[in-house]
Length: 194
Image 1 (cartoon, rainbow, N blue to C red):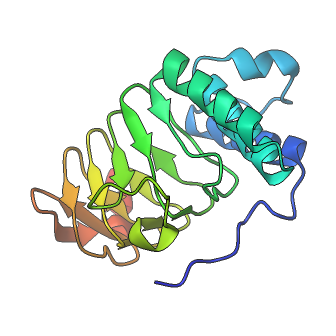
Image 2 (cartoon, rainbow, N blue to C red):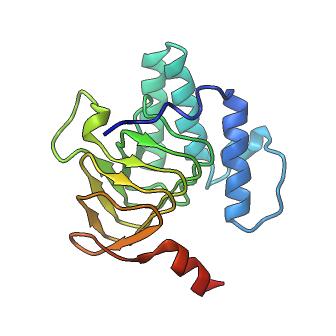
């Protein structure tokens, strides 16, 4: 599986946080507001702020401090995210507890709910991105879903609650069940909700 370049490599720490904050406000149906320092303490944004802080430290060569920030995120918010994981702007994690985000790559505007596990099929302490899931732009991973192995979750794809994904999910598809099966197009679902 070929992984894209890190989508935040050309963005500053502030620009990344601004993109995450703007998407969270839109997701919540709230008026857009400027991100302020106190925004980082919002219950829905604090864990994302710590993820971004760890990433920034890791990219700057401060790997041990990045690991410490990631550990704080794990202890306080119950979410495990490696500092070296490339994650695009616009990340939303509405509820973080019990979440393991051990993907190989996460694109732009991805939403990940609580109790989700993204990781390799076997223990991978060396963190090999090619053995882990690749989430494309706009993917939504709902509560309790497990996405395991070198699979691709396509652009705009939705993984249903408690699904176990072991194979690729095409662009704009909806996958549910154990093991996950494609049941619809996410485009069709969005049209029926409107």
